[in-house]
Image 1 (cartoon, protein in one colour):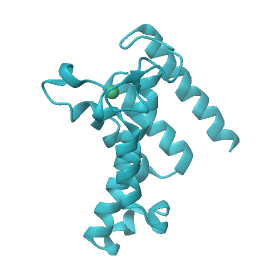
Image 2: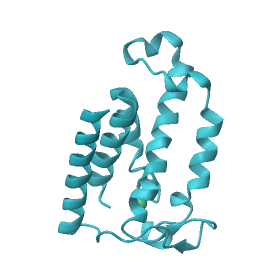
Image 3: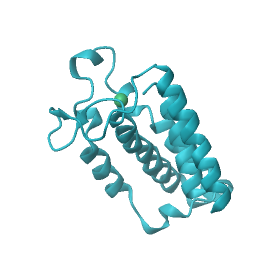
Length: 150
Ligand SMILES: [Zn+2]
């Protein structure tokens, strides 16, 4: 999936689930992290450790606290810089975690072992294809309808 598609799908998903623009924005910024961290030599290790869900779940568990779900943007700074950073990075890495199933519907990703890519979900389209455009558009339309019913 392209970075634009990752950003759109992640933002739409997180906004519909949380109804919070700060959470959706932080997740959107993190949605391209697994690809960006691979750097200029990405072809050597594309979709290995950077796309292993276990690392993101572990980081999110370290950042977790019960109040992480109640993000009130304008008042977030009153809690202090540490709390604000922890909250931002929790949702940032939630976006990075969402990147993995988004990639899994257009190719293999690591599952049990970080260096062994497997087909976890059926391939729905090829990256940068018209199928990707229709998937992202259809997915956002579906979320829009679900959001109206919820
Ligand atoms: Zn990726």
